[in-house]
Image (tube, rainbow, N blue to C red; front, side, top):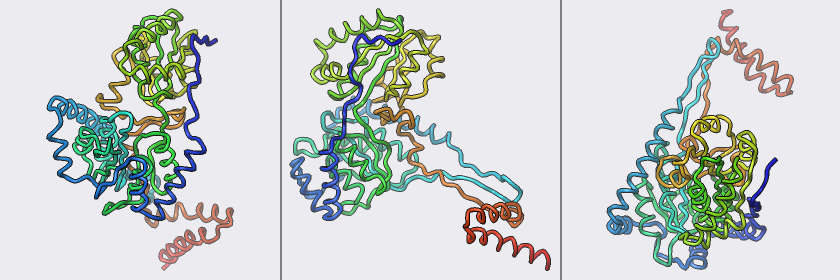
Length: 429
């Protein structure tokens, strides 16, 4: 039996009919009118109308000169961790070739997507780490060309440190455009840049809806809503750290869910106290506090089994497990639905978001029930092939012909029996 010390709706409606209609109208106009429509929307929505939306090398060099040396070192550290883990993931993916029958050879290859568009959000905050996740990882996968795109800030182009991280992460081209018009520019092409084959990256409700409507024209990674955090904790957890981790993710936006699942009622009560105390001085209390009030919950459950069941039902984007050390492996084995799992008191979500090496583009809105997050394999097409000898045809063709006739696909059957007939004629002669 679950007892709620605080219960709020975890999710809110993200895409209204107005958002759908607006995005559809924008994409239709851009597809018809091309760059003229993109420029008009950029002027109207961002007050941004540069001679070229493609960022030049001189602007990139200027951003590089302006970055703080210590911050540049930290950025390089984080980039190296993301690159190292993505490389290890890529090396774990083996190509395959196997002789399944005498004369029948089957296999698969992992072929990189040719061009990827990476949308790096920069509305509420300059999201430096997003470039690591959506530029470095496709380059590790072997993608030939990555186009990075970010919105202008205050009529001044891309935030300089964001521009630096996009360039040093390996972007081949950078576009300064926001929202729907930015995604459309990558999907349909702009200036001298050819269209992307795939678009990745998070954004607001308009960006998510644009990705949904562009799917088919291009591939996408996933449809992301507001970021989420859930924490499973027992009596051994540090209530202040649990409260801090809930608020740390809630600062993304006022609709970000934050959920505590605990096997100890006393801890749940103490976390409520600590959340209120921390909000008094929390640097982003206006946003985090609104999120906690509207979408924060604390659930008390009987035991590990009940905690796992409730967590899998929620299927959170980020899931922390702060329990006794000897139970961590049990949770790792039993939990099934999450975007990324953070095991133990030291593994806070911020590490995965910024610099530990795993990817922070993760499924939200219960999508973790059926998909994982962005990773190097997302940029690879696993394509099969087959090679047959005459002996292979002799073994396979009779079944193919019979099944084709049963399906009334006589032509399919003939492509098999004609080959079989030729082999038999050659043998007879």
